Image 1 (cartoon, rainbow, N blue to C red):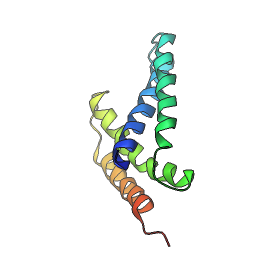
Image 2: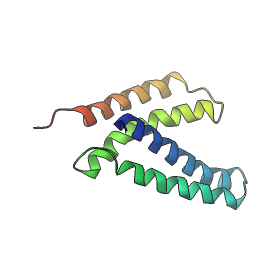
Image 3: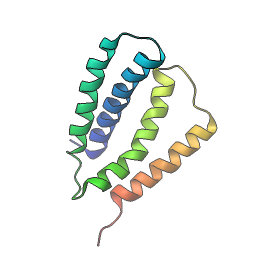
Image 4: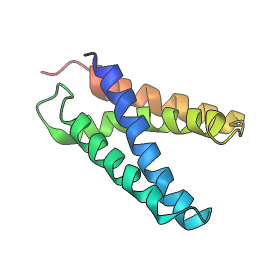
Length: 107
């Protein structure tokens, strides 16, 4: 499984899990939203262990950029809200940073 695919799945799992809490606390959804939300957050944590790096912090740091892009996609697709140019610019900057962290040559 490719590293990008793992990151994408992890981002979807984390955002869905966090959104379950948002829906419960901010949108007056049922407390039962939390069950799949917690399962999703557990899946997120497990998925990040499959990233091919020798240290956890590097996997988490690179994931940050992927998470931001995924969050902007969630904003558009799940919440039907168009990210503005500053959202997109910020997402691209963080994605570049994630690429540098993940793909940079190690000595």
